Length: 213
Image 1 (cartoon, one colour):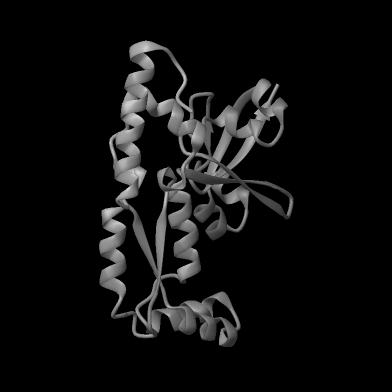
Image 2: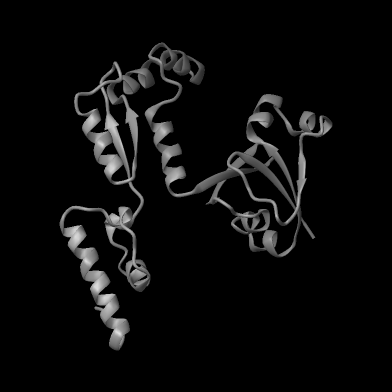
């Protein structure tokens, strides 16, 4: 339903009808310029073809498929990305690999740096503009997902409102560096822990210790 009066309603109706005509021809809304008059209407109706999208292509063991080019062409027309997976091969590797290191070895033999599932998760996060940061207390590690661009106080607020309201600073380290070092102590001694203020924007893979008043 197009609400409004006079020229405003007429402009919204015309823009909406033009958009529906494109959709009827199989064009995804996400690829179309959206007239200012109907931006709010798109937000209210939340049509599926306006939502972020990615394609998954299941390839053969050798990483090829006769249909792959068709999928990539379709994805390009819809301004989407394609995540290739080798479902059967990866399932077999998952059954015979006894450790992450052994799995990585099998993947390397087939020229793969990661599994299709790992690639899919990463692509999904990129598509939705999400990042993950970590907190730990003793042996317990927790992962938290926030929108890209989230500041340290707001990230803390996803854990508890006090972390945002009483934020003083954040001690930030890299997950990769922490994993390699084995504990926080060597990083602290080497000066690899950053003291970040309220304006700090959380990066994917940050490990954060929040200090509050």
